[in-house]
Length: 190
Image (cartoon, rainbow, N blue to C red; front, top):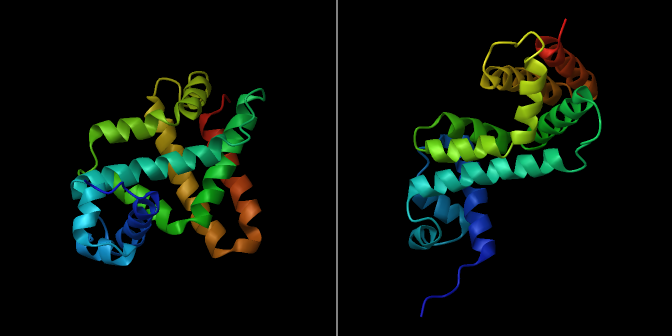
């Protein structure tokens, strides 16, 4: 009779994967991930049948973690600007607080080993935020462009903002506000 899977081991494997993928990229060997997680490599494959499955589940786990952070205390009844500002603020704070996870999420987002279905599910998790950007973009500077374009602009501005926040922690809030202003001005109606 097979032993039940341990949630602690599952989490340990994902945490080890974050650490090694941040260091070595998606080519980080499963043997090293298993060793860092404190499990046998065969046990890793009990939890994740293949490395691609591990990468896909890790991608979705990171997206889910970020979404949970963004949607916690999400101001649903406030203005579009305030809701987007909340999402922005949480996103950049999460990215600065979790630089390895931020890097791994970006690497996995570009990897062909993460399926189109997983990437779509990762984007679907942010449907509320994407809808806001689409709503704002339909009457502003992004009019006529796909919502993914506004999301890419947000992502690029957020990455730059996070880099400056991490480099100069005493100025983090200032950088966050200026980054959001740049984003808002890029999508808002003039």
